[in-house]
Amino acid sequence: MEIKSPVSATLSPEQLAAIQDAVSHYRAVKGGVMPALHTVQGICGNWLPLEALKLLAEGMDIPYPYLYGVMSFYTMFSPTPRGKYIIRLCESPPCHIMGAVNLAEMLQTELGIKVGETTADGLFTLEHTACLGVCEVSPAMQINEVVFGRLTPERVKNILSDYRAGKAVDYRTLPRTTNPLSDYLASGDELVLLANVDQIDPLSLDAYLERGGYDGLKKALSLTPEEVVNTVKDSGLRGRGGAGFPTGLKWSFTRPSPITPKYIVCNADEGEPGTIKDRYIMEGDPHRVLEGMAIAGYAVGASVGYIYCRGEYYLSMYRLNKAIEAATALNLLGDNIQGTDFSFKIQVQTGGGSYVCGEETALIESIQGERGNPRVKPPFPGQVGVWYKPTIVNNVESLSNVPAILVNGPDWYKSKGTEDTKGTKILQVVGQVKRPGVVEANLGMPLRELIDKYGGGVRDGRTFKACQPGGASVGFILDEHLDTPIEHAALAKIQGGLGSGTMLVMDDTVCVIDVVKCLLYFFQHESCGFCLPCRRGTRVLYEMICKVAAGTGTQADLDRMLTLAQTMVDSANCALGWSPYSFLKTTMERFKDEYDAHLAGNCPLGVCKAEEHSH
Ligand SMILES: Cc1cc2nc3c(=O)[nH]c(=O)nc-3n(C[C@H](O)[C@H](O)[C@H](O)COP(=O)(O)O)c2cc1C
Ligand code: SF4
Ligand code: FES
Image (cartoon, rainbow, N blue to C red):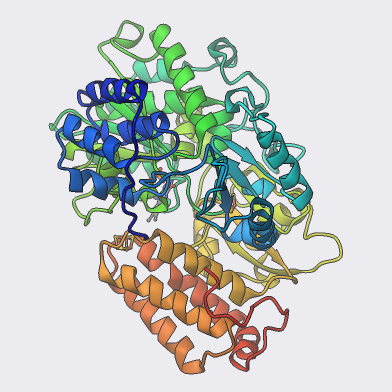
């Protein structure tokens, strides 16, 4: 993490007045620090001058060093000047293997600046970023609020010339992102989560109601809260955020707590490279998320919900906020919903560009306006969460399953999927396949079917090399593993994982050591720095893989890396620090020849360059 000294600027009277307005608004809002930073940054033109930070600190009654500490945690905030348009080029593994490195070089040449710099005319700042959540169109970049995918040098040149000519895109007018796969339904009998996506206007509450929307909430309100918890418990739904914890069981721990208020937090941080599923629901069917949250609120006795959405998902947040307005107007949210005693309000909270804030306790800290350091657990959020009160944190997709479970009953839900993992799931197939995208499938479908039938198989003329199922923290698997059913238990047996349900497919042009290097760069960049094993361990692992990639590593280095990664599993405070072990172990075992070739000074594919650090 870079320590940037805030730069001074003369603020105009209009800017000063707008900052004062923002301060007086947000000082009265619980958790107002993050939205205040976003708003003031917008007022000042994409950055936070020293004077603005001081005004904010003073106005919100926060010591300036404390505010600096919060601001500097999040990559989306900058205390140094930036251009009118911030180009954020994704460098995470799915974009990396799809050619992001060449685009970075091309963009630097085209703009005449290096990454981190601003063009002399003040128009563009070029930044690197971790996964933008649009990996179905990798390689991708974001310019302010708008995402551009399937980038080629030609396309990048055209986009830049449009922006230079003043033709910036308004993100609010964008169509819903088009799924490159022809159909959302894969080997299932019906769509549950994606049933409305692409089928209805996401901004129309009427359209949602016509398709049975909010019937799940109405059903819930006719039951006791305990019956609702039991319905979700009986359905067998397991959390879709990665760990697969049973959702109803989680609710059952919090429901009896006499401590109030309680909170529902919808985890919409979606920062796991390769993961794009929650965005499809939020952009395409935002009411489903709100309905799931309201049912959760009724079940556990919460009256406030937060949706913590990653800062890059402007379109999702826009549509969620519109949906909240519409649902409140019809008393589907708000006070005494549908004439009952149940009141429930939802607020969207914006992240600031930090992967670790997807970890539930880091996310809670961020909602509270703090640096996103994960808390030491226990206590778990169910007992001590937002504002130190009982809090349910559930993933977008987990909550989006709930309305259909209430309407159709738990038996209907558990008839889908496998014994181990019930229901349907949004699966993502990204990387070097013909048709990257999302499908909803009954769990249990073999991986090979997802990759070959829905993803179209690897690109023309290439052969399959490896797949990293589940996300960046999971092991690499081989062709011989592809008949494994997609579910938690079976994938864990082959040292893979279901995780968020994303499958990164790599063909024979990929150097495994280069991808591991890219993964380790990601983890050392995203480590929050709170605990030593992870803060130092991720950095040392990255430096060592750079040495291996450069052809100067030894077998002793590889052994040390595995020992260090194992120590991190045993001693790091949160799962981010546990992540490198699986992909290091599986790649060292399953791609031993490739490691050996690098130890002998040779990258068989000529991908790894001689320099030790490329970042
Ligand atoms: C580093 C890290 C990042 C995470 N990112 C996310 C995320 O983006 N979305 C998510 O739902 N869960 C994420 N999780 C998991 C959450 O901590 C938590 O388990 C989840 O939100 C619980 O919801 P569920 O039970 O519905 O799955 C992350 C965990 C870690 C350790
Ligand atoms: S393991 Fe890493 S990300 Fe998690 S608390 Fe420790 S330093 Fe932070
Ligand atoms: S958008 Fe680049 S890796 Fe996801």
